[in-house]
Image (cartoon, rainbow, N blue to C red; front, side, top):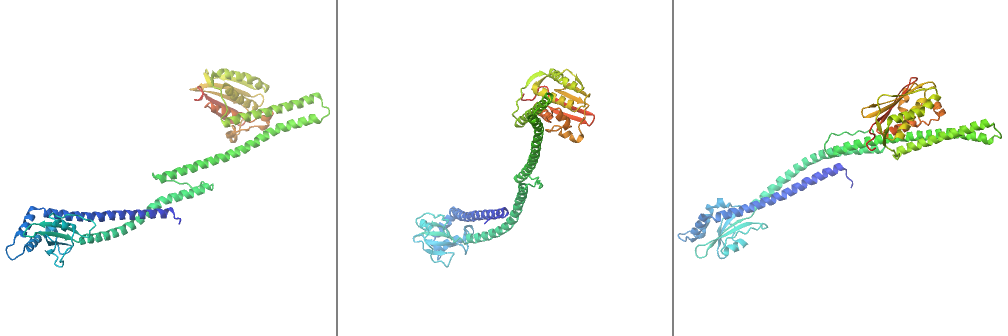
Length: 484
């Protein structure tokens, strides 16, 4: 039959109390009996081995003068020592036995004419004191031979253990009452203990069921230092981490879908253009040479655009997979800046931009992947050229701050709306989609730049105001990443 943990704990506590009381009672009963037996024989030995007592018995047994028999005189002497021997008319009696046959001559128990031959009586008939202790017997006895007269006598003390049985009965009654009270207390305490243990587990179970159903609202808090408290806090931490992970997965799934949609859209546009112009060239019987050349130029440009998109996507996929390889080495950062400036100067002049380079401080040599860093610089400058109206101003500046170098690209272009600033490093994000497509942009440049800077343990930031321009700044450690 299935029982709840609460019931099981209560039953276990009750069984534990019963077992403890039973074991304690058994040991106590056995201890009392052993103590009573040992006390009896020790007391008998103490009296019997007393020289004065032995002399009195010998004198009485040897005294035949007068009308009083020796056995009556022996009985008189024993009554004198009855207090030390614990003799009473109830459970413990003395007997004067014949030293030869063991027959009862007289004794404190007037109703008993004979006693059974016990090992101790037989030992005394043999001439030695009998102190054999038989725990299993229903009596306790000692037998002491006394020389005197013609036949000799045996002093025999016998206890029927009625006092032990009475004490055991009383003890059983006490134990029974104690057990009853103990059970009542243990039931109450076990219920409290079970409740203290089961309630947190029940709460954990309900919370786990809610979490398994996708509901992370239950919050479990516990200040307890015990194992259940640790389990509660661990579960709460696990639930929070699971909720965060699921949120990340949902966002990742949303981003994946958006990414697939963006890739499809970005590739569909050049494919549509290529197909349209190719079909026109295929279907037209004769076109002017200039028109054919123009159409072929569009096809080549759109093909290059698709190639750029695929290459950028491949690079980002390698970043995501952690398989992008870098070639770290020490190089002149200043020379890299000047080379990029010279390479982009012609592109800026095509749009009548005023493009300047300013080095704030002497620049140190930098540990990094020069080709990747130059790629970042080109992306930063390309964005400034694309999103700045013809005749604008673009400034490339760099300097050193502590153990890092920084480089900024400032323009007076169209700027970025405030609500779009958190998206500037997202893949396929464009401030002006029409302008970006006209210039062959893929919307992946800043995403790639951020990944490259991150691999160098640097950071990249962007500030912008609509209609006022944009400033994008990259910071790189001089000694590169620790694993460079």
